[in-house]
Image 1 (cartoon, rainbow, N blue to C red):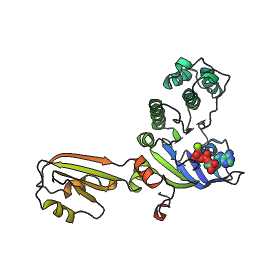
Image 2 (tube, rainbow, N blue to C red; image 1 turned 30 degrees about the horizontal axis):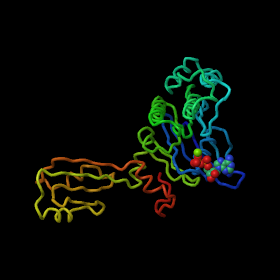
Image 3 (tube, rainbow, N blue to C red; image 1 turned 60 degrees about the vertical axis):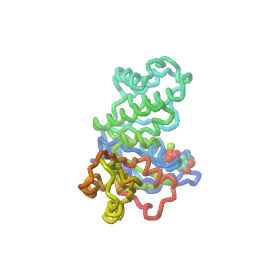
Image 4 (cartoon, protein in one colour; image 1 turned 45 degrees about the horizontal axis):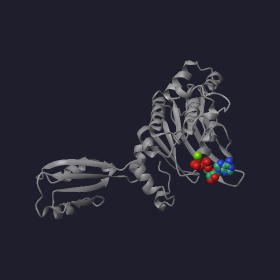
Length: 309
Ligand SMILES: Nc1ncnc2c1ncn2[C@@H]1O[C@H](COP(=O)(O)OP(=O)(O)O)[C@@H](O)[C@H]1O
Ligand SMILES: [Mg+2]
């Protein structure tokens, strides 16, 4: 049973902006779902609706099976400025009847021990962001919703937070996290929701999204000795139409670009067996590569404008 069901959500702000348009998807327990899309795509609106902060104009959100709570870290800083770092996190622990030992664990995890008795007013932006994340992570929850938690964090802290979220999902929680750090998303999240101008463009496991978005793999081969003069032409005639071949001018090697879904085996089978391979490397396009190539300009070709499902 899904831990979260978003059904036909539309949000029309009073200013007339339609921030979300009939967005539907479900998320299973144990999923770390990354919500990605350009600035203004509707990520915060979606996460604020899921968290119950704002109401959709139409549609429904159902969380869990009635059990388990939802913890939330919004994009805008929401802390108690007059309280210390520790008190900020302790407050949430008390409100959620969480043992206070969890406060120490979160302070340690987010490297906040040194500033734990400082008032929130007097800490850095990155530290404030950590406090906010700490307030979301201090309690056990069925669903965690974090809106750009790694924005403003140093790279190591960002990595640590995403990795920790992955662990919470692996332990059975549902994690919704928006982020522009697509490399970290690819390393940690299992699934992706891509929003574009308030519309759901894709909801897929990340690796499938990367494959379906037309990612390629470049396989480079170095031969033990130069191939015979006629070989490059011969190779070109046996090249499948969707592959692209480049041979070194001195015929000591070649590289072939294939759809990621093709995999390595057909490439190896295509290489003439008489050529001894000295070195082989494969470079796969990442989520970031395909996103920048296909979705960043927000003017997709018509055939890509369908929801990848
Ligand atoms: N409170 C609001 N009132 C009116 N328009 C808003 C409000 N919040 C966001 N918007 C608009 O809704 C759209 C989606 O915003 P948002 O959900 O914050 O996007 P994202 O988080 O993906 O950057 C944007 O066009 C934004 O300007
Ligand atoms: Mg946002």
